[in-house]
Length: 278
Image (tube, rainbow, N blue to C red; front, side, top):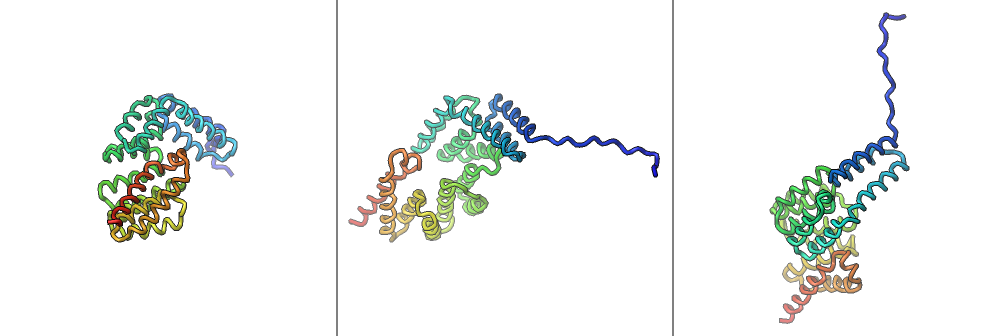
């Protein structure tokens, strides 16, 4: 039975293959890269990766992303970045920023450079400038851990301890370095916003769970040194930290960010010895 009305013709929806999705994503990323938008180019590849199911296409895309990243590693700008990182680790944020400003314009949007620039501004007590950079990063990568934890560091600088604590509770650290940063900042929030004893309890628990986390060990020892009547425990943990550092070579000390902490630990240890001797 027909009403005399033809059904409108519907052409079948063409399914886009993984190969086409990957190819389109790579071309968009290349265009962004040529425009100097390295961060957006890498983000474009990440978004494309999320759409793929084929293992072969995913592998190819990840190799392309690595290549884009390596172009930065092989550039003159990377030498500036490494030099800037050394200044940052030596607590010279002004020199760090000068080195970063010397990088080529095409690399100014690189994620590593943007993160380090934000860190330098924070170290230089310029939270507003740091926050502008962090917002740019989070606009592209909302879950970027480094940027999210720096937002918490800004809240601490602004003495918004409750907000910092709430923000930290939303973060999910994955690596050892991320976990150490998270633990240390949360302890600082507890010490400054509540009481040193709460911070001590928290750090003791963290040290029991992660006994090989050296930065956490240092922070526990340093906090004991700031609490009246805890000199013996401060010495115990400082001694343990110093001995661990002595068993590492210079490259390991630098890589694990302990080169700056070792002299601080030695000064604290000697200061406690002098106080106990009087």
